[in-house]
Image (cartoon, rainbow, N blue to C red; front, side, top):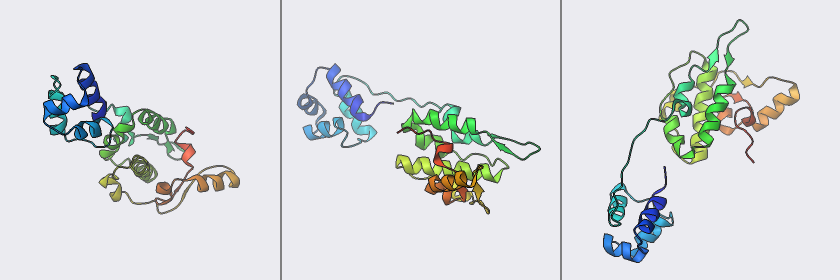
Length: 193
């Protein structure tokens, strides 16, 4: 979804108006138009409708469901029971994070719906930790449902050699550590640096 700045600038330019002319038509100070277009303010919907309509255009909004592949709640079944013990479906978790990386504006909606309890405490805690990390990284409020998911009573350590385990402990995100999950961030998030 384009930002308010992009919407307004596109509407103004399509109408062939200067910022000053648009401000006069909309009955607002030119500084209002400038601040919106520069992304310095995020206008209310009412204000955006007002200034866009002054360009001779109409602002329309649509609500669409977030595709399931970008909803954390859809991952409650991302594990398989086996004789050797439950197996987390890391591929699905990584695919979710990769997909969401391409749509950073969807983070808040993607983590808002609480996943149903999976029946696997490790996965429930991991999903809450992922939601908390995504929220913190995006600068949005953590979903309230995360507070209802308890940290694991015993540490969940990465598998591997002692050196690999130690490295994973060092690279575990803060949100994971708070939930007693000692997995490296690189186990889920690709290095995008």
